[in-house]
Each structure stands twice: as C-alpha cells, then as structure tokens.
Length: 240
Image (cartoon, rainbow, N blue to C red; front, side, top):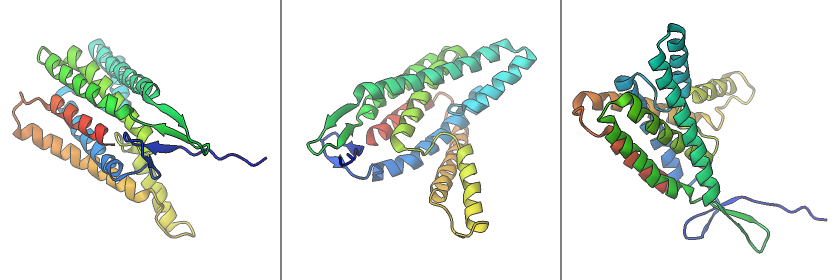
C-alpha cells in the first residue's frame, strides 16, 4: 500500500492556499515584533521596575523580593507571571477554536489560521483597558492586564511564525554562538541559516529599547503608551 503524504498548508482568508507560509508580512512581523517588545520592556522597566515580555526577569525579581520579605513586590511579580500564563492559554484556546480543518480531494490536509485576526482586536481592547486602569494606580490595575495581552500576543505569534522567538533574545544569542562555531570551528566554514535571522531579531529588539527610552524622555507622561502599543500590535497580528 502506498504511503499517504499529509501536508500542512496555510490558507488565507480568501481560501487561497499559500505554499510558502513565510510571506512578506510574516518576515516583516519577525522584525516588528521584537522592536515592539524592546519598546515595551524599556517602558515597563523604567516606569514599573518589571519586564513586559521576559518572565525569567520577573521570576528573578520575584525571588529576590521573596528573600527580602517584600511581599507586595512578590505578589505583583506573581500576578505578572500568572497573567502572562493566562494570556498564553487564552491565545492557544482561541487558536484551537478558530482553526478549521478541511480535507481536499487529493487527501491534503488544509488548515486555515484566522485566529490572529480574532486575537488582534482583543489585544487592542486589553491594552486600552490597562491604560484606563493605570490612571488609578498602576501596580494592581494595569500589570495583570498587560501581562495577559503580552502572553497572548507572543505565544500566538510564535506558533504562527514557526520556531522564531520574537519577545526575548537569549535564544538568539545562543544561536549566534552556534553559528560562530559553524563558521570558524567546523569543516563547513560557513554561517548557518539561522544566523542572519537572529541578528535581525536582536538588532530590532535593541533598537526598540533605545527608541522606548528616547520616547520616555521626549513624550509627556500622560501619553497613552500602552493603548498605542495595543493598536500597533493589533495591526501587526492582523497582517500576518
């Protein structure tokens, strides 16, 4: 019996099959998302002494606060981590709900990934609610909502964009180390395929941090940073 081949193809909203899932818009998203992550982390670190997308940093801060008995800080960081996890779970649930499986006549399995179009307005609403809530005192109003939004954004984007992580850069530094070994230590004497992408992600993240800090210096404190970021994130997600 001949083995059946099952291919997973991406289908756009018009029903057209996209043979190459990494479209131009997705390549752009791989650069824009780390840029926005850099801005977000810069603003959150400067204003609130926490990270927007890097839960390792928040876990370290929580552990340090725990060792020093700073219970309010422990609870705040714990809320951030829980909120981020809720966002990841919510994004995954929405993806499962929105994904429609179709079977073509040739036996090819087709998946339509329209979940990002559903998540986009939800993200914008979450960030707008966090902005409004933050006017009454950030620590217990804005933090959980922002964490939910960031968890939803970056977990959903990563599942759609493939193995590329766009909200932290530790893995990309590791990839660059491996690429350096491939280039100079191995017989192949060439850079591996992921080196260029990692350089772009790290560069966009760093530029985002610089831009975020610059905005904090030149823009009025009352400017709706997070509501604006929510709109930008929604536009990026809807375009992928």
